[in-house]
Amino acid sequence: MNTLTLKVPSNLEAALARMADVEHLSKSEVVRRAVVAYVG
Image (cartoon, rainbow, N blue to C red):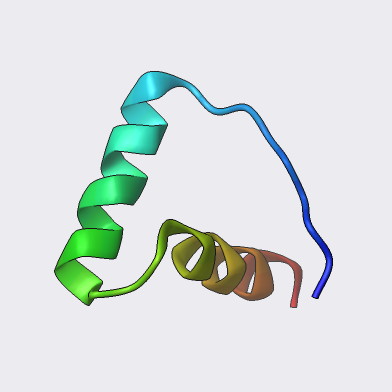
């Protein structure tokens, strides 16, 4: 798997961390799923 680095505002990172915690996933997995849903 490739690595992608991006910068996000602190409020977005906090929301991402909360979602990852609630879903018992890593932040990377939450972002992967969001990208797949958006890009296809």
